[in-house]
Image (cartoon, rainbow, N blue to C red; front, side):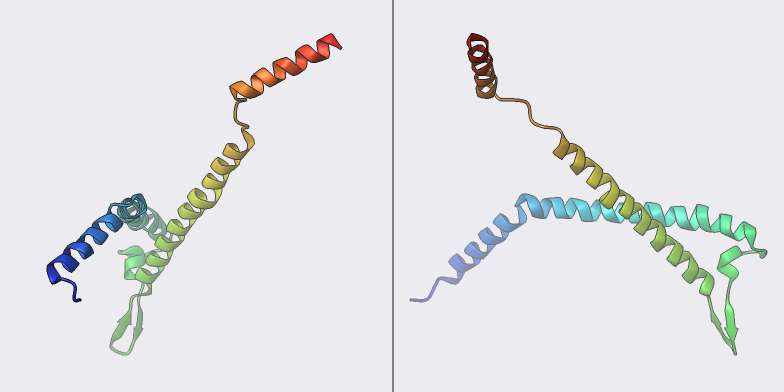
Length: 135
């Protein structure tokens, strides 16, 4: 017995809605958006602050932008590549600090703090202390 195409389309739409509205998918989407914004901030930091400071150390009008290797009639702009490498290193370092160091610190703090005793545990401790006092 064939399934009605309209019913199958509605079923597929319902399955997609259930998938898309799960918390994990929404969290992932938010993470991707924040990651893209963070990448733009780090890119700006590298291109407008770090690399111009590097170009102060090296003579030339355009600093690292002007660093080119000329082979015949072709130019290889290795200065731009160096800028992208610095950009990657900064992003990798910040991610390392946040993911590895900060999150491990947070997880360690969470593990070391014991939960407060429950009411039952408190009552049992009082009973134990009373029994010790009688003996």
